[in-house]
Image (cartoon, rainbow, N blue to C red; front, top):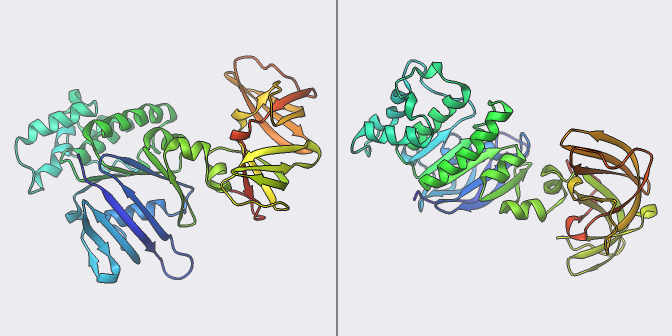
Length: 366
């Protein structure tokens, strides 16, 4: 089992203006995979590079396996080479003049702790990543996905204390990305590796991460298991960035426990879960995912009447644009046949547990 990572109040500034990383704190227990998720410029890659030692933090503390590797306040900064980490980049960064075996063996030949049979370790790691039959091939003869597996094997072969992955699948085509994404989690779990993974892809984060940290403007907004991020987003940005494209505007009528009742105007009233202390009279945004809209159903709560404005058949599913009391709502229905048609009235239910209310700060969630 590899070692744990602890980040405490990490700050990184580039000149003047807003910090690129602004007071970020989280831990990665040994053997866990944490994914940092967010849009470009949110600070996720800068955080990873600070952990790697490729960027020098402005403040805070970073510890790997209980050893502090960065603490600017004490003038402490351990070099990347002495941190015992592995890195897999967006670009494959393989040695083009070497074979697959030579690429993977290279780190072992340049590390003092590389004891034992180097060839045996290389063979074992190549088998792990599915390249056992490719050892003697020139690395330049491989596909993009295979070269990324070589890069992964090279980072795993010496069993680092921590593996850092910076959008390693983004250069691959969509089909290969999906396949390698699933394989990557299996490989990391099989080796017991502690991983910090950076991506802007929400599906990738959900599949790979034991926990996901959503970042925006240098701040960590929420760190939680995928199911909690997906079903209990902490704020409107987290909800929107992870796929809750629908936003209904209304006025808070009251709040009981974690449930708020909100007046949507002509559409009627809606009940929604809220993590925020909303009060009567507050303007609120209600976020929900298109796939959670139940078309043609009349449940016990949050039952509405809408009108189909447009339907977009997509083979395996149909996406509907609906009018709900003057507000636009998108719904997604699985199946190879569209069951509803444009210009028709429709009953729909929005289950309260899948509706999330947040204070309207006057800014779009994205």
